[in-house]
Image 1 (tube, rainbow, N blue to C red):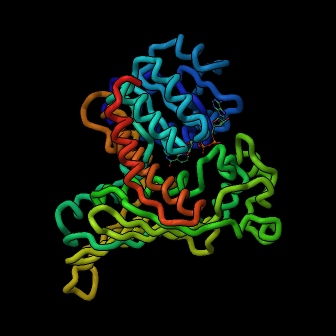
Image 2: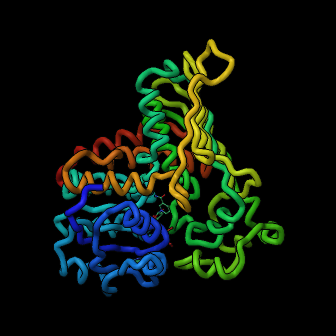
Length: 389
Ligand SMILES: NC(=O)c1ccc[n+]([C@@H]2O[C@H](COP(=O)([O-])OP(=O)(O)OC[C@H]3O[C@@H](n4cnc5c(N)ncnc54)[C@H](O)[C@@H]3O)[C@@H](O)[C@H]2O)c1
């Protein structure tokens, strides 16, 4: 990473995610000082201090922190229901803002965020859809854009989480829709962002089935939980004491089918407690197939006229890294964007489209019907065109 520029940053919501990201970014060579943070119970602080990174001053509120600016970057890593409010406050500060995914939680918040960014944040809001920076995703996009598998016809995608990850979701604030939005929104907005980019069109109609059959009072007896020490350390803000799902109201497994405007059809299978974890996108085109395995970090291309892959690539992330080198790559992308060297790989618009696609899936599940997506795109386009926000 380019040396010589030391960034002064301010953090709203110093939880696990920003703790992990900031320490990966420091290890990658990003030279920054955290001037301070606002967080009622900052679970990410130990992640920084154990690496010798000072978290800066604890401020009582965002206005007090921003008054101590200017900052080179304000970072938002709070739970999802606070994102819109925190984005609005952060945009009071004139500098760049990084906000974790999903940028917001509901359809109305999406249109509001579109108006807000259009009015006050154009070109200075970066959304942490970290998978966009992943080396494997970049390579896949390059090959798809180069026509490696011809015209895309259909896609089969999965995310099957290991039991301990599902147990974490069932204890953490992600167990409740009022805070998280939905399980699929929080967990697979990355996938729908990238798949939407690969497919090159917006969704036209969606259907979905799902529910909660894993993290229940009965299921908790057999769930593979990680025990109290990890629970205290990782579960964080408004955590539940166990994985019985007592006040959980989001799904723990869900399937969806999506048809896109260019005729591409996609199925998605998600599950939060799979003995054999899997995160895989299988893209089938007129001239071949591309299999992207995000657990193994491998990419395979098999042409239609061949019995086996002609290209097989494998990436290895840095030791202890859970995103296949994407956190480090996003740190480089973020610094390059702050320095005006290149555009950040994902736009606010794309993050809103990805979120709204998953929200349509959740609406289809909740209302037990096929949801037509065009009204969402009309509303998004008009919010983005609205400069009077
Ligand atoms: N890009 C990724 O791969 C990725 C991975 C994990 C999480 N995330 C996103 O990052 C965000 C944070 O997730 P997390 O896993 O760090 O959760 P977390 O619970 O570990 O951290 C959230 C933090 O926000 C704090 N908080 C709560 N109320 C607040 C308030 N009013 N003001 C300021 N801070 C407040 C909590 O005390 C906590 O420290 C979420 O939006 C999540 O979806 C992204």
